[in-house]
Structures are given as C-alpha cells and as structure tokens.
Length: 93
Image 1 (cartoon, rainbow, N blue to C red):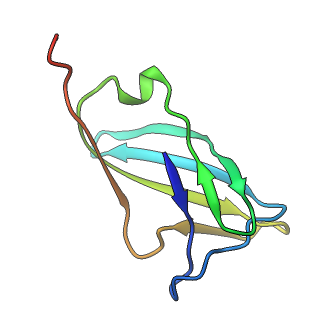
Image 2: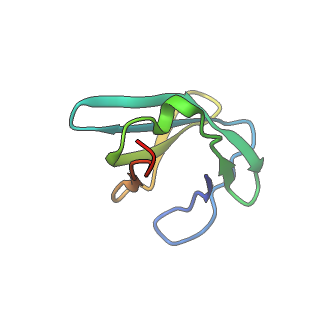
Image 3: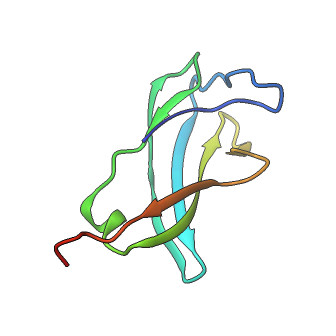
C-alpha cells in the first residue's frame, strides 16, 4: 500500500527523521500494528507491505498512518477520517 501523507491544505508532509506506523482494525480490535517504510521523505510518501495474516480475515477495516516526528510529536494521516480497507474472501474458501 503506497500513500502520500498530506496536511489539511493538501501539501505533502516532510517525513525527514520521522518514523511511521501503520494501524488497521475493525470493531473487533486492531489487526495490524506495524512499521511502515518511508519511500520519499520530502514528498511525504510511505509504503506498508502486507503480510499474509494482515488480510486473512475478510471484512471492512479502518486504517491510518501514525507519524512520530523527531522530538516525539505524533500525528495521524489522514487526520480527518480513516483509510477504508476492504478485504474480500478468497473464492476458493
């Protein structure tokens, strides 16, 4: 999953020296709590690489990226809603 993290004005957030976490969950709790990769810090681009267990249960999930800036300040993206992730069941199951 590739994303560009932007502020409320649509400007890419500089992620230099920051760490990125990816969280995804549903009404039953968190399914993913993992580190994401910065692809281009100045352009605000990040990537989360799915692993098999992340998508093993079909359903609708909410997700967000949490940025921890140098000094410890945290901000989530998107900051006005969540990313909607839909995992569909495998036809062979």
